[in-house]
Image (tube, rainbow, N blue to C red; front, side, top):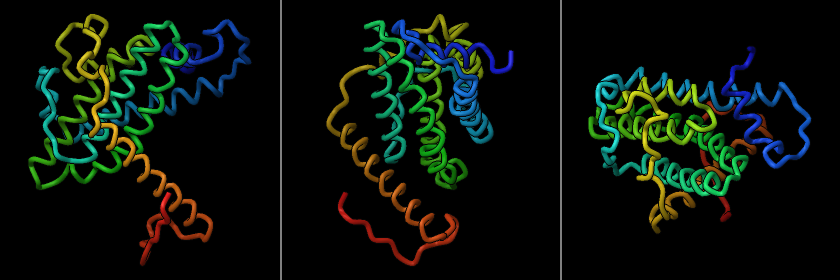
Length: 226
């Protein structure tokens, strides 16, 4: 009653219980699911709703996103990577492994893609603005289907708010358009973005070490080969 059925369900599905192993149950673990997955995903949708209301009117789910923005290409490639992982592990009945990539993706979607794309949502460049909005909608719709088995209520809420074609996310088809081997460009984009994120992490660590606040601009930054 405190955290909700979805949080409890995900916590158990991603735990050793799924392999008939012991689990030291912790409400802290359930609380983390609420904060790191449910609340973050709801915040992503709220941000989309604030700036992409026109997109809510469309019920076209299969529309392929055409974009030249590297962030859009990266998040679509990452969704494909997650969809492959979730699909393969679910088919093997390894549900604990199938659920864990969902949390990682929500973190990346919220703290990397949306944060890096904030200005694009309000940009005067119509093409870039619409590609950001359409990409976010496509991602959320497809992700709601991947999320449905482990968080049925949150997935249903997202799917219906986004104008899914079916009466329920649980009647929708699995997002097969995102299942399949990554091509060379998609793999390269994922690898390159991973390097960029490492550099950002090292930069933040260096700032913290010498007491320079994040909002304070740096005169210069040198990066050694990783």
